[in-house]
Length: 255
Ligand SMILES: NC(=O)c1ccc[n+]([C@@H]2O[C@H](COP(=O)([O-])OP(=O)(O)OC[C@H]3O[C@@H](n4cnc5c(N)ncnc54)[C@H](O)[C@@H]3O)[C@@H](O)[C@H]2O)c1
Image (spheres, rainbow, N blue to C red):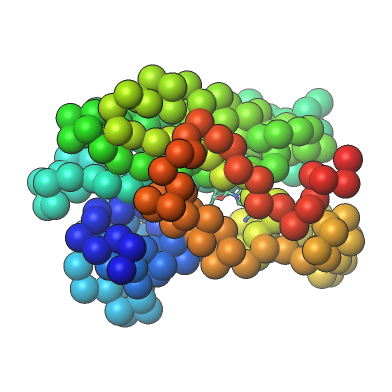
């Protein structure tokens, strides 16, 4: 198995993409450190994924102390962190820039940007000491272009790409690779909730309209995204670092 004996730390682990990544890493032999704000959803994963070798850590990625603590607990239990999927995120309110509240702007920055930054800061310290590791940060197609009515979200995802490239260059000589993934819509709660906000009377209308703009005519599955994460953390991608990899069914190829 590709990740036999490896330790994979995942944030947003109880969400659609995080949980699927946890399942695939587990199936490939990894030991899991699962971090999420939603403690109940984390606990439900134990039976759902038939987890055996794992650590559950309820934590808020917006708090540097929590991030320091999840890193410390991972090292205390397993002595290392081989893989870090820095993935927790929210989409925020659906509103044009003129209507965005400071509260929503700050909330999104705290989770999507500061959370990713704190994760990089503390996990990279461990990886630099062990002189090895692979990191994948979750960005979005919104990290590559404008996203009407999702301005703060787009800003955080552009920032994640900037942090990814900077970190990759800083640690390239130390056996550590850092990449970002940029998915178009994925069939998870995040996207389903957004579709409901866009068309409250019938969310399938919003979804259908978006799917029409994607050449493959559908949302990605969480499995398709998780497969890319595993590839970027495997030996098969040993020359890949500092990239922001599109996984978008051709969405951004249309323009
Ligand atoms: N679903 C999509 O269409 C899509 C597309 C591109 C990028 N993304 C990105 O993928 C990542 C995962 O999203 P998802 O689709 O799985 O959404 P999701 O809502 O299913 O999962 C997100 C998880 O993050 C957790 N979380 C939220 N705030 C947190 C905090 N402060 N501390 C710790 N955990 C917290 C939630 O509890 C949840 O389990 C996000 O960064 C999102 O921006 C999603």
